[in-house]
Image (cartoon, rainbow, N blue to C red):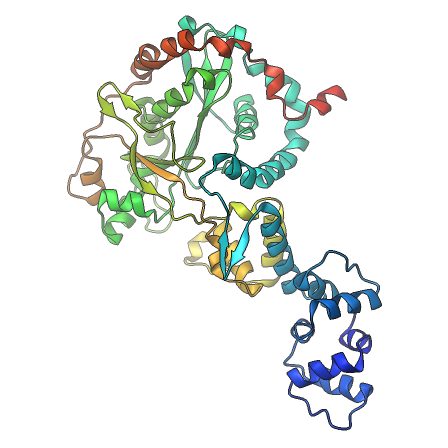
Length: 463
């Protein structure tokens, strides 16, 4: 990276003439020093914009003359390296990262081949998952030998004796460490949830081993399949959205997952035990913006499949009622494609060079959320907002907690007629409907060993 004069001095007279013509500079009779002086005087052209005039071969040769790395770099990377322009650097990093993950650009849109192939989708998420695990290794790695003891060997699970127990995760508790550790095993990066949160670990009281995890938090403001199902207006949504929760993580861990306990964990998330606890925790609080007191009652829970169409939630019934209602697919937008470590650079760039857009002074002066950081970085890098549309659609499911949830959320009914779904009753149903039958048909769960659950086995070898 050099000054404008240094970079221009490393160019040939032919290359300078090419740039001068682009900058609408008269060429007649001008020598190299004259051309350099004329180009330098064009302050409305940044060095990066000037270098855009050159071909890849010319940029490659220029980088070599300036003793900068050139091998294997494309135009954006070469221009970023030569100019030192922070916006071009973040642009080059974004595009290189997307290509490495398997995306290609079609115009301004991202395209990922075989988006319906779940193995390819897991591969697509793999960088973000690896980054999350790498980040967590410093704190959870030294504890893995103890944490993995909460994972059952298959021969420690007796299906007839399984006794699920809901334990709320408290900040700083061993359950919080276990919750975080389990979430690192998901095939997609697990969100930490937004706003109001309620987290649980599901333990098997028969052997004190982890069965699964539940994470509930505030929902996204706009979700077309959900909003269409409810049928509310934008004003009704603003009023009623606090009665909706999103399950940002739901699932069982092995060997319980092999016994279909992912279905059990999903149903338990909508139990009255949990929704009443949420009401107890958040009822009576004032909204930050409207200052209105909230009841904390939960009318609806949303969740999305991890990878395309879901086999876990489809046809999931409690007694004769379908609990999880499929209502469509997400639009395929989000930020996971930037969560492979790149987001940290984008956040630092935004903090140093970009201005947050605060919609309310009560929210503070920083960036509102990850989406705002990504959008502003993309724009500053001269890229299109379409990069937020990764095209990976996830199936959306709704779990009404009452027979009149939609009417209540629209404001047509003034009180909720809750379903009486208690955790103990849900498990009793699950036990007879799925657990015992699955254990009899497929006893392979007994072969599972907790050592296969380790994320950092080499760390344990060094202890």
